Image 1 (cartoon, one colour):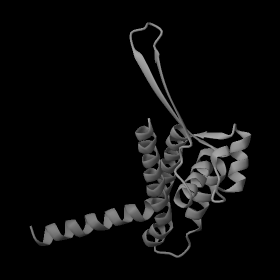
Image 2 (cartoon, rainbow, N blue to C red; image 1 turned 180 degrees about the vertical axis):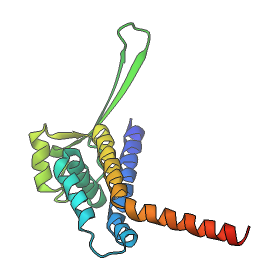
Image 3 (cartoon, one colour; image 1 turned 120 degrees about the vertical axis):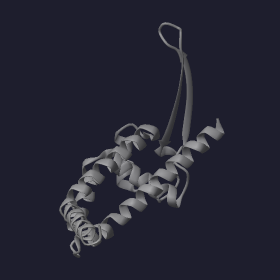
Image 4 (spheres, rainbow, N blue to C red; image 1 turned 90 degrees about the vertical axis):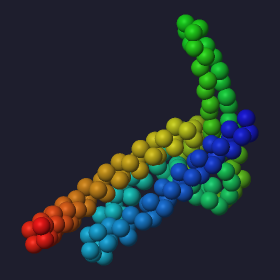
Length: 169
């Protein structure tokens, strides 16, 4: 059981770290791709995602917590049952972060209140899955924001390639 919890802790820690690295690089990538200093469209995207999604806010707070204080899983439960036809054994695992177990000031107080209102714990498996979906949606919107320079760059490459091939068949 402990090795399963440790494995989930590490997987959550890895995804939160990778997402943080990605989010931290978005603004500088936007600045480079768009060739301008104004990164407000990307900052706006990030702020909207934070404001609109409970799981996004919670997992950002969890990321900060695991970076500075402790691993995320505070309780785990394992289950096993037969399906209705008794032909298949179903296994389940539940990993939670219970806010009563948090003993650090490294967890955002406002988010703790939100979690308390929604039951006092976070299902880390479902929240991580939803958080990653939010990041994927943010990435789609980022790609949309840079679509014009991307299209122009592809046209420039095609033009140079065409010129090269016509000059040097």
